[in-house]
Image (cartoon, rainbow, N blue to C red; front, side, top):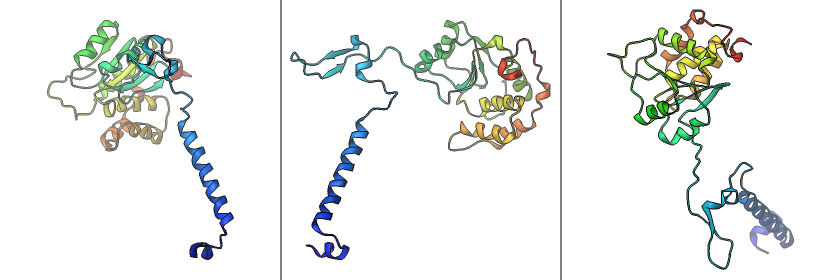
Length: 238
């Protein structure tokens, strides 16, 4: 018996039991790690035309010969806001197959900069209504300028007409300009300012929100928005 065993009062049998328990726990942990998540897509779930068995002996090794044709990759900062209403940063070509599944009828573009050509092509090919330069003249403006009240008002009145849905609200990164409009929409829905601010900051990243954006949301007068109950979305008038 070692000096350490004498000090802690362990005999050889107790030490052996502890070691066996430790080994069993390590084996169980390893087994749990090997189990895929419940929503994982396994190789066996892929179409048979993109998988072939390796070797003539049928050793069970499978090789993926082609990438899946359907890719579901949402845009940066994508999130549903309400039924048939979404928000995001500017979509890239990688995101187009995802957007096709939303059957968008309209897109609101809030950035001063022009969208990418691939995004404009996607909008044109899918006959999507494109709203841009809302309520302001972009001449002399820059990307750090906040939205004007006229811009916010026009964007909200488009959102409040379900004939424009499904609808995506977006800007370059889907953070401050998109967050301003969605924040004012939440005020229109009756949210308290603490909840509005928390949602806005959730999309701003590690740098946090802009105090001017939160002040603009707080000061915006939702009573200036004209809502037609006959065409308003159900989630707004309930």
